Length: 479
Length: 54
Image 1 (cartoon, rainbow over the protein chains, first blue to last red):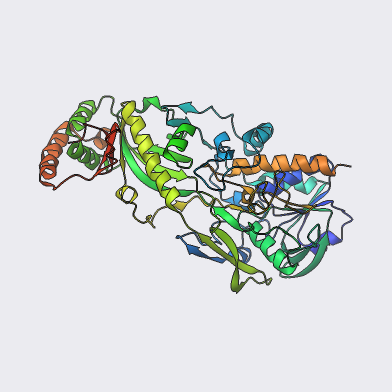
Image 2: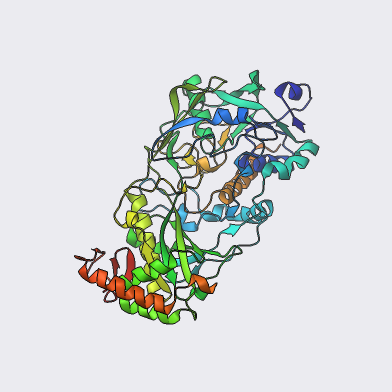
């Protein structure tokens, strides 16, 4: 069932047990799992079936710290959420991403990768993925890893027909949950804004917040203001430890022989560090995306190598037209450490049309991020030397520790943290089952629960975690 | 690989000559990661084997 407004829904006799806010990958996946268990669900989607400037306007906000994207551009507010513009890159967080690392403060999830592995086959079905190939070490320090360029499933398009026919899922469009009411133990109701007007309140037995990696924090922060801490009773970490994946072109490489690498369907290859390298270099996880293609800088690059290492350059010259393949650009996307000061806050004065304070996002990269970028490129360069496979040249701004360029990608549009998972309520918002600490009936889905970010695109892990939460709720709520 | 994208040996040799001279008059290379125990050095951004650098 799909409804255009809360008034239209109220004219129906449907009695949902669970209220989900947000219809992105997490919300849709949890709703489908509950429906499969026979549990009636309502999803409130703030936008409609298509993108609109009026809806996107609600996502405007401010940023401080490092340069970042406009907040109404980096996410989408309509059925399917930000799956409507994602690129489709898929990979699940590594096992090592879940582990605590002594050199990374506040790292370590309360679950292991093994806890989400039972849900990966279904994740692959949803995202239309072929099975992943195992990582392949190419040195003690570097492993070839696979990121799959998937068809980039648009959750709204894919599941609209299923929801239209469903007698267990009610999708209510144009209905914005502006706040939750709670007493420090249970959430009792959600306050609604539907089609530009007060939509009254809605009560349910269980609430699941899936409004995205920025908006989850905003909704809970504002709900806590309105209910005097009655929605997130342990709120020290709420909005905190927010993370992105910095993404920059960190260097380039001359590849003497790239047949040692397996390339994907779009001619690219990805490389990540081993656990040993992460520990020894005291860095975070990273992914070096090797884009092998002819480009005008090759001639100057070989000439530059000749200046630094003439014998090597002469050897390279002998390979021209033979085994020498070409140059490659090295794009690096990497893990950001979870830092308390990187946070989503409520703007002091700016509010949206429904009266909810807009977001003020404070996001900065620190010393650990720079070290990861530099050491990661060094590790890859050293691996190429050891394998006699090429040479790496690292960008001067990286080696000199200068400011990050502002004319590059900046980051991955991956919004993680803010309601992070953990065992300690002082340093996390949800427990291992994605339930808000201290609350009986409030859960959070999506990348805002990520304790740490790993290096890969988050959607695959978001869907796996949503399936796990759906299974947990199914078991807990099934009567 | 398209041939025109590859530097020719003649070009390379010319490049070596020109740039090697330029290098010779540079005051010094930027040497980083010069831990004597490391088998690698970083010279002007290039990750090289120790002893490979000019």
